[in-house]
Amino acid sequence: MIPRYTRPDMAAIWEANNKFRIMLEVETLAAEAMEQNGTIPQGVSKALRERGNFNAARIDEIERDVKHDVIAFLTNVAEYVGEEARFMHQGMTSSDVLDTTFAVQLTQSADILLTDLDKVLAALKKRVLEHKDTICIGRSHGIHAEPTTFGVKLAGHYAAFARAKKRLQDAKKEVAVCAISGAVGTYATVPPEIESYVAEKLGLTPETVSTQVIPRDRHAMFFAVMGVIASSIENLAIEIRHLQRTEVREAEEFFSEKQKGSSAMPHKRNPILTENLTGLARMVRSAVIPAMENVALWHERDISHSSVERFIAPDTTVALDFALGRMANVIENLLVYPDRMKSNLDRMGGLVFSQRTLLALTQNGISREDAYRIVQRSAMKVWESDGKVSLRDMLEQDTDVTSKLDKSALDKIFDLSVYTKHAGTIIDRALAS
Image (cartoon, rainbow, N blue to C red; front, top):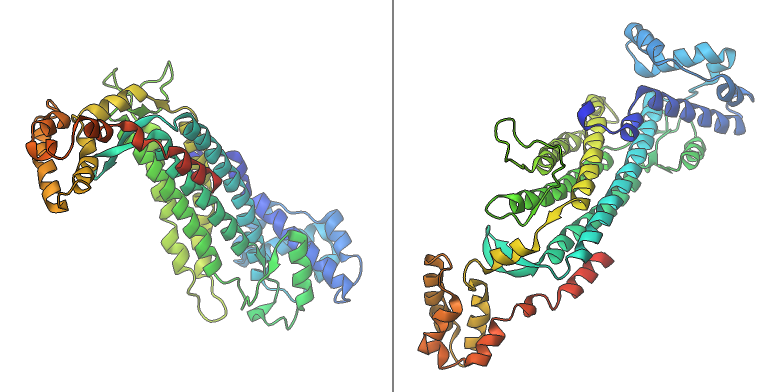
């Protein structure tokens, strides 16, 4: 985790002390359940509640000798608890503690990410409604296509993040599982009711078949969802980066009074935040393949997944948390230039109305192939003039057009309002998602 891109609440989830606190809680809850079914004597869980403690540095010290992280943890806790500690971890295996703890950490991180998504959605909703009727050019292949509105453009991104929220909610449920089933997952030394008790207390559900570990397809889905969210962040970031280009300049990141854009060129205002978001999205997605490769483990368990997860879990959740926070800020403070949008739309002399002209001609008795040829020959002259002549002027000089379309018909064709009349419907549908 790099401090530059780390926010404290998410970082705290992956700190050693939080992990050990959860591990101690798992052991304590298991002890409570074991006391209830008579597996261990009364008073063990009370001792764990009252005297159970740990020291991260001491655990590291013990682990250097024993070469086993869970044994080091249990040994350190026993130093605080005393005699009753001999009944701790009865019938359990390391994965029972580690995988259940990991499930809690992932659900904790998912809760933060869901809050982050809500902030992105709130920021987008405000700007969507603000620019519902702000007309701008739509582009395909980076080339002017037909008009749309900036609100509709942003509504598409709102819908994507709404889908992201639903996916993350499902992914959270997918990993919110508890496994306390003993060696190779047969419950031979720890009955299923212990697992059920711990799961309920931690807000988890028992794993269907744990073998000895929670199956990693669950975690693969969680990281895949984070990768998709990162891609949605990049999609919006690239849109903003394009709109900020000097030749376009329809929107740009907020630029503060004392901000500097370049060490060499005082005039520069660069899209540094969205460029940063593009990079962070790459890092989040880089965890997806290792997470999927973790699914394939030997027989009932191995630990080839462990080292991978020690990297990708904190790094990915921390990076995505930071990216979502930054994206919400970018949208909230985005500078939007409607006059430039209109100027860019008009720049190519009305070429954006070519399809409406084509359709009007087909509706007036000309074949689609002939109508396309008629409109295209005028459109190419406008294109080659770089918009210095207008499409309407060219059409009005073409008898193939004027024989079918009078002035009132052309007025109707060249009416921008047709492109905005359904903006409300589209936006309402997006916001309802």
